[in-house]
Length: 249
Image (cartoon, rainbow, N blue to C red):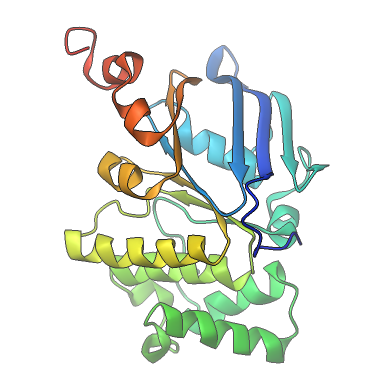
């Protein structure tokens, strides 16, 4: 696994010339993305822009129709999602996907054992550590399916972190949360970045990304239409038009 403590700004994970087609439907076209060590890269775009498909391709849930995925200087385009998890690519989903019939602790054990490759004892220690970090330790023996939305989102992050990733892919982690709940998760994400983790964060609440991200890119109709400093991206005419239409732009 690549070390997660570096803040040198070098590229850790990238998509190079990625296309994704489903028959005649082109979801992504010529997409180039770089996620650098110790940064938050924000990704925005209207519904149907291809954002979640990009995360699927980076995490290994889907293969690109064309193009490459590079992680830590190694091509991983045909590596499975489980293999990429073991390499150090963690991922959360927009809709939390816990193993509902398993306990909260068992969910994190899966991440620690299958992702980080820890033995049962060390996986237990790792799981307790991440559950405590997300205020879930008192719920460790509850079925994951019984949790409320905020705790399911906490568990989604805890399970990803149990696998000891060096890059974390977040898909609308703030969706459905109150402002106070969102602030709580944002504080945790800021801690992860401060610890050296690279983060790619898709979010519809654009103000969160302008506040947190060092760089931002906007996808529209499967293409990157703007990339750079958050303030420059959100004020870009093409981005405004993609969200609001040509009259607003």
